[in-house]
Length: 330
Ligand code: UT7
Image 1: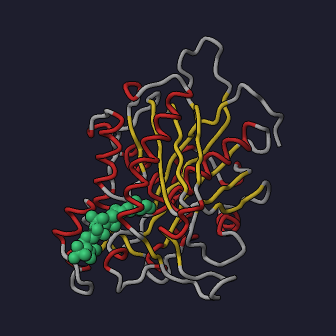
Image 2: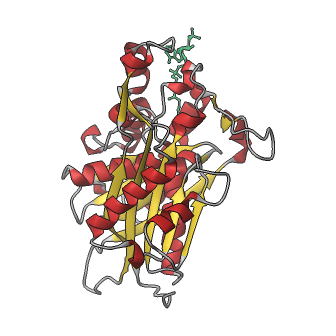
């Protein structure tokens, strides 16, 4: 517990990620599903996805990504007093997968819990952690997006099974009070979250403990989700930038949810942003749901594209429908 400091900002101290060992190409998929490399590439931009083996789980990927992020931040699990883990594919119905990560990292204090907002999960988790930290409820947090979506795919439904992959990404957050004369202090400047439950049946899982008693499989009305994604993302990005008195010209990197290359292109076009400023990993990771934004972020940090001091805009949209954005000076 820390004393609330209204001037403090949450800063990203380190990023990390983890992918299952097995990488599956479109060609390999087309041997078991009625699809083709050309259809998947043209409609989605996806070439590969990583698929978890039976002994790779959401928690094992989350733990690996968290260790990676802690190393980057120069911290240990015992330094952390909050874990917020976004997932739609927890290890168990309960307890929260975050508590497994907590135990594995040797963290015995603070709080660890999951949030469920599917593909927008990381934005939700980031926003929750940011709010908790700035109100004094924690001082160092791990925010993780981790999924094994392959476990809930209907491998006979070519409209969904080619789109998703498994993985995890994490960030370590700390609190920093900017110097009074710092014109552009680093940290999370703003987050915006939205949901519209009227569209819950556009993207959902047809099972669950209180309905069928089974885990269920992913069902999606892809074309309709696509339409909502383009409109909602443009709107939330405009809104979040405007609240900070910023425009798209201020953005160094857009780090979007990686659902479909065509959605990324449309969003960049609507923002008037060059495609060279968009971090794209959908080609090699496919859609990893809550993991996709932190995986893309870590990829671009580690390959040197994202530099300290740059302005990043993160966004995602997914089942619920849920969507959100964050502006971060890295
Ligand atoms: O992360 C959460 C948010 N999710 C999204 O943002 C996903 C949004 N939606 C999409 O990305 C796209 O709608 C899809 C990639 C899912 C589908 O692309 P589309 O251009 O909307 O295609 P469609 O669903 O309208 O299907 C066009 C045709 C259909 O055939 P007919 O009816 O025209 O003969 C499908 O049966 O493509 C067929 N099709 C396929 N063909 C080969 C659907 N899936 C496949 C496939 N391989 N895998």
